[in-house]
Amino acid sequence: MYRYKLTIQYDGTEYHGWQVQKNHTTIQDEIEKSLNVFLSKKVPLVGAGRTDSGVHALGQVAHFDLDQKKEPRVIVDALNARLNNDIQIKDCVLVDKTFHARFSAKKRFYLYRLRTDTFLLDRSFTFQVKKVDFNLLKSSAELIKGTHDFTSFSKHNDKIDNRYCTIYESAWKEDNSLLNYRICGNRFLHHMVRYLVGTMVEIAKKRYSTDDFEKLLKNPQENVHIYKAPSRGLILEKVEYED
Image 1 (cartoon, rainbow, N blue to C red):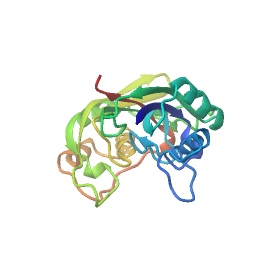
Image 2 (cartoon, rainbow, N blue to C red):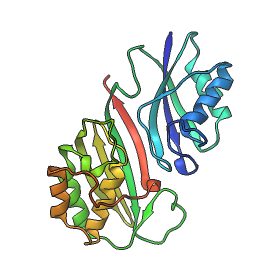
Image 3 (cartoon, rainbow, N blue to C red):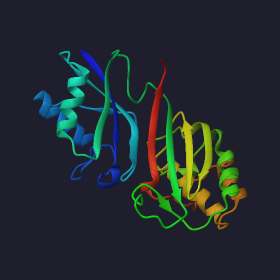
C-alpha cells in the first residue's frame, strides 16, 4: 500500500466546507470525484481538518492510499485537469504509511483578514468593518496565547470532551486598510477562530469588554453571548508536521 500526501489550496466561497455532506458541494467531495475518475475506483480522502462553509485554504493537507505506485506529478496534473478552477492541488508526495493528515499534524496556522475601507474587489476574502481601535485588537489577541479551555469560543458538541487548545501565536498586523490576524495552535474547535475574531472586533469597536473576554478564557462557559466573524475572511494557511 502506498500513501500520498496532498497540499491543496481553494477558494471556499461556493462550497459548503471541506467535509463531504449529503446534498451539498464540498471540497473533499470534489477532489474525491476527481480521484475516482482518474483511478477508475473509489478512493477515500482524509483531511487535516474541516474548514467551514465559505472558508478558504492555501495549505490544506490530505492523504489517500493506493495499492499501486504512481508518479506524484502525474497525480497532481490529473487531478488539476479535472477540478474546478477554485480548487488546486499544489503538491503531492509519497509518504510513510504511518503519516496521517489529521493525527500527525503538530501545528495549524490560520489567517483572518479585515478591511477597514470600501475597496470591493476582495470582498469574498475579507470582513469589511468600520473604524476599529487597533490597539484593542492587539491587546486582546495577546490574551489568547497559551493553553486554554475554549468552550466559550466554539460550537457546542456533545461528542467532544477535551476542549483545551494550545495557542503558540496570536497577533494582529496592520497593512494600511488591511488588518491581518494570524493564529497558530495545536488544534482548533468548530468555529473557534471566527468566534475569537468576532469577539475581538467587538472589543475594538468598544462594544464588548476586554475583561469579559479574559474571564471567558479563564472561566469557560457554554452558550455565552459572543460574536462570530463571517467565514469569508478566514484562510487555512498551512499545517505543520514533524520532519
